[in-house]
Length: 117
Image (cartoon, rainbow, N blue to C red; front, top):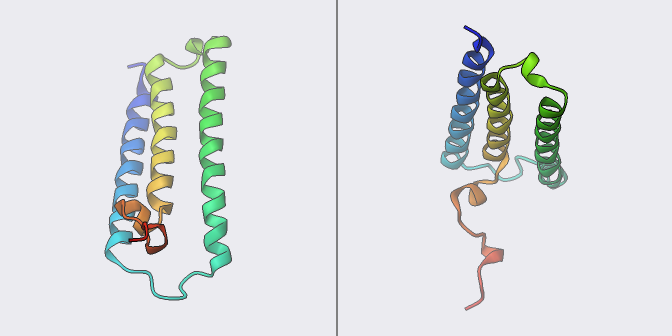
């Protein structure tokens, strides 16, 4: 069995997706008490999330480029490599689900974003 790494990475990626969905569901069900997080920390979280997503995308792009240019098939099977990219994509989805604000995660607009009547 050559694809041992892929069989280990698939449950890891699925676990990340499940954890992200559970975290989002819990965040939607429990309201955040007033003053639970300071505004400057909330703003920092909104700034850091796109940077982390860019870093994950950049690492995935770089890995893909090096896999094909430097002959990665000698070290990883295509299924192993796909499993590795699946874990990176799962982490990005987890990050979005875990850090999205409840109003954005539910698809609702805040009062400031609603058009005037």
